[in-house]
Image 1: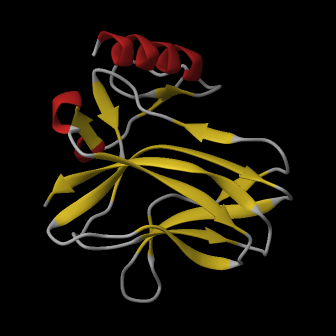
Image 2 (image 1 turned 135 degrees about the horizontal axis):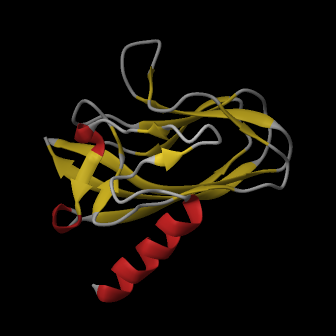
Length: 153
């Protein structure tokens, strides 16, 4: 456990995050995540990893939902072969619910986001048994990984 905490603290320091997952921007105003987006480290018991490998425009399922649980994304890495806009979405009635805003990926430049300690900021689905999609604005190769946990609903 101490290895995880030491590693997470280094990630937090590199990203400029405070202990509560706040990111200090250029204007020094912290961006505060809603408290329902935090998981206690002790609550993260079932962790999975999914590989991202797609060149399809539109929605690609990256995590399949499971009965009676929500998905909490703990970390993600995306690398695009060309410039493209990526958005994480939750399965819902059309149109799908955005879990993130549009993220501009630049060819060959990784987008990496990971957890912080002691609380873990997470991108969580709002409803149990829903898939998580990666939506691409164009047919560009995007690869990477996502680390996630399942959370009882």
